[in-house]
Image (cartoon, rainbow, N blue to C red; front, side, top):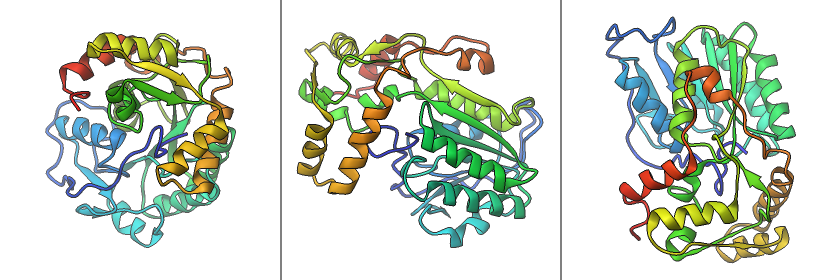
Length: 306
């Protein structure tokens, strides 16, 4: 999964955005300091990348369906205008690199980026997703001489504070089809730091970085950590994939999308993604943020005041 509505989605639905044409302020951010296009720039990962690039003085275009720089994955007619004059791009595909049509979209984006003179692309992908790898390769194959770096992310910790699991934490019950499988939840601040390093620094061309947190937890353990941080009980309620699909349909998700999500979770949460990696340390030279630290910070910032 990359940016799915129920796991890692960049909710590309807010107004505004930054089209930074004010130049580099000279603070050493590496070789690449030209304009960066951030697709899904108003979402969970995109806005963090935009904020970091702007803080470094790197000119940035925040692309979204309704913002100042129009960009819609379902309408490729606006891609050239968004990419023209940029040097690099951060690609967070919606709804997910594993969905039908994602590989074709990545190939089309790669061709457009190459034609527009883009020199580097950093692609957000899902860890342990075979279909996402197909989309990665489609982008590489179509992008020609464009440098492509792939960042494969574990399950976002912020899904509990900003995503679809937020209401479950607030209500005290996390209903999810993960069973007893452990997951090394990744903090989005670490992800954004890695993406910015790959966008602006040298030595990342062709690299594939698998990013995880420092420790694997079951969803039951994660619920306990969240409860301790929030100061109230949070209980994990395991359900089967079909039961979860039915639950999603009750909340208005289409039958096709609900079935896709249930099948995807069954693929991802079978244990093959349980191990941690050193991806964050390889890029940033430091350890990733732990889940307990994430939970304390989210509590401090009022994530679960609802």
